[in-house]
Each structure stands twice: as C-alpha cells, then as structure tokens.
Length: 187
Image 1 (tube, one colour):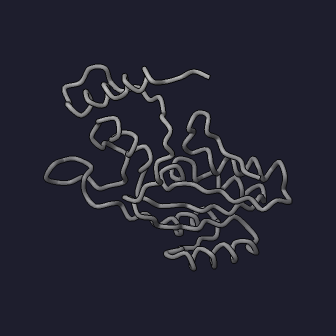
Image 2 (image 1 turned 180 degrees about the horizontal axis):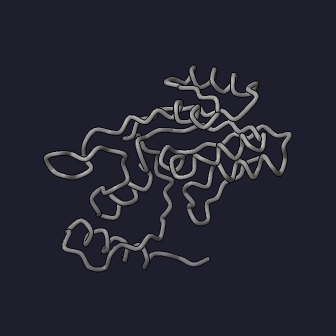
Image 3 (image 1 turned 135 degrees about the vertical axis):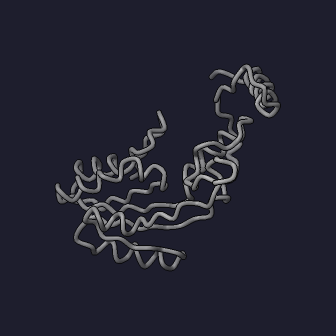
C-alpha cells in the first residue's frame, strides 16, 4: 500500500510517518521516499526508529534543496530565494554560490543507521536489495539533477500571488492568477 501526507504539505513528515506505518504493522518492509530538504527537517526520527527496533528503508533524493517549492516560487513571478542549499556568494552576498555537498550516508551512519550511496540506477537496485536484508534502518543517498523537473500534470493549483509588487514578473503572475481564478469551476 501507499501512505502519504498531501493535505498540508508537511515537509519533514516522511520519516516520522514511515515510522508510524512500521509501528502499525511491524511485519511490513517500509520504504520512505524523501527529498533532501525534507530529510534534513526531521532526520533525527531515524534515531527513534533505531531505539524502537523498527527498521525503515529511507531513500533520500538529493536535488540540493527544496526544488519543487523553488519551482512554485519562480512560477509565481518571484525570484528564487532560500530554497536551494547553496553557499553565500561573497560578491553578491546572496545564496547563489555552489551547492552544499551534504554526505547523507555519513549523516545516517552518525545516527546509527546503515548508509548507502547510489550514483546510478544499478547502484540503487543493489542498495535496495542489500537494505532488504539489513538488520536495522538504512538510508540510501541518491543524487539527482537539481534542474530536472517532473512533467506538467496539467492541473491548476490555487496558490495566491501578491496583489501588490514592484516586480513586473510578480504583477504578470498576479494577472495570470486572477484569470485562472475566473476560469475555476467548483464541483
């Protein structure tokens, strides 16, 4: 089966939620799929899974931040701000430097979990196979392209845009938002 919290976009929920699923049915193998940003919000729940003896297989897709939220932010006319894990640029003073290199394998191991790095599809298959027979929680670090996005699902998400802004892109996004609201149908 599949368990996910869509209702309120609770970033940081995944590992704790997966642990809850494991507690509800300890005989199941539980796979937690999480982005790197969300992982860093509540990765310490790995410790709880170890304390309780509830093994999880945590797959961390590392795209150097909250790229989904960044895409939403920029789609609404705002410049990118605070959603990528970058160093501060010494010239501009902005978070526009290189991406931070976070070692999620070492992080997981420091908490007591087993860690694997999967740089390819074959590495991921191998890590998943080994994780199934592991005696305790496993974290698999999978780097992915930060610029690669999922294709459009051709839906519209009612995310309000600022009504007043000095930025022309935000003003244009507001006009587009208002037009979309007028086309919206209630079912």
